[in-house]
Image (cartoon, rainbow, N blue to C red; front, side, top):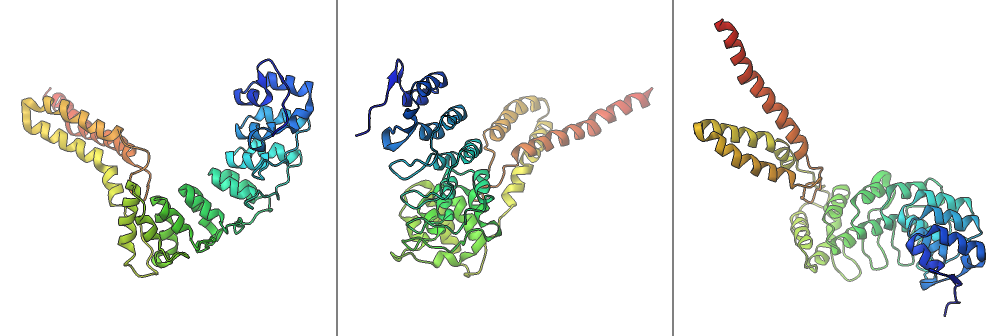
Length: 341
């Protein structure tokens, strides 16, 4: 049972941190600095909570009044681990100034780098790597590498970062014999699997974990749409040679890029053919075109997750049709008018 925490009107110090009430926190600390050593739920200190909420002012307040950044919670995690997971470089830097020990690991033997990868911030991961105190080959008690963690969260950008310059061994296995591809396939992470296959080739599809299951076997156990989509992808490439590396198809990309131009041209052509009914056809078809364009996301929905060029295509279409109308219709009429005089 945790010791009682002194309070004033408005609750205890943990309530104040949750509400972001910096003034009341200052009052607590001024009255009794020993509160900074108190632990609440899960063994969290006030500094843990402040780091968890990413509250820079409170972190600075607690550190400047003697809070220890190396105190661990019940899971063996320090407030610095929390800051790494939140991706807050400022708080991490502040804690390092006040003596945070970057070498501390939690009860699962996860390092600060593991927590940063779990949080998904490439900037934070690179910041820790530049300290020279971490290796991308570091594993926890279950032999899980940073690449396994990135694959489990489905963070494609972090996976690409870890694969760059061979920072992480793509064929590393955990305690269950699973590679990062096994982990991603089990979670239905289509984009991560595609990225791993592009980097390593189709040979990893044949690798089995200690239970004798391939990535495709694990994927088939999932019931979501993403698992179904990934099953089709893996089934397609499992019959390829082991050294074959899938390549991105840009057909759909360029079709999407030129879709506004071609569709706009088709609508104008239909309007010209209908004569007097052309205005009516434009009033019906252009809203349909706009709906198709402006309901799309910034990335394409295929497993390649390429940047969606639809809005660039809309700009190109606007410029193209404007120039076409100007030089093909307006300018000839003006020239004919002046030539007739």
